[in-house]
Length: 188
Image (cartoon, rainbow, N blue to C red):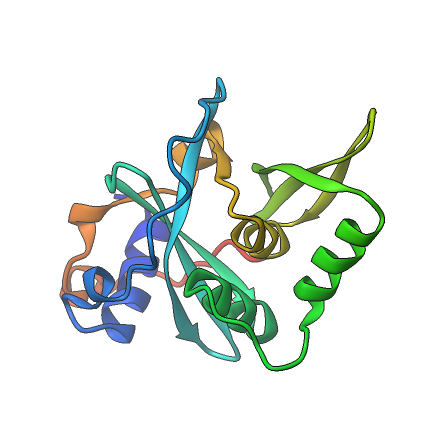
């Protein structure tokens, strides 16, 4: 197990009771996403408090692997609300984005987490308006929030998944991490 995986397991073990992930799963993702070569459909399992922000826990739809993504506090709130299919009383930033896209006749057709660059997750949103399509670069936290708001699958590059995923079975007690040197967690 890599040092990053051990560090993330420690953070997870300290933040949750042993069975909390199973209890906090959101409703299932939209049915049967069409497969994309080189990408795996992911879903939000939970959003954990972490420092001044949160950690979004993504899982492949087969529940074999977890990918933790550190996000800011506002993004954590939005993602948690959208995962639970709830809305704030007044529109938040991602609600505004959804409204603007809709009012201008656009449609978000795909959201992908494409790369990990210097420890930062990079994502792409595909936006279509009539015959025109645009690829928009955005933070993974924004991509996740938009996908949840639109009921779209979150596609993650198989290369990113291989580099950042933790097997569900690795959720172990923190004593395995004693004496491990400090390491950074991928950030948004």
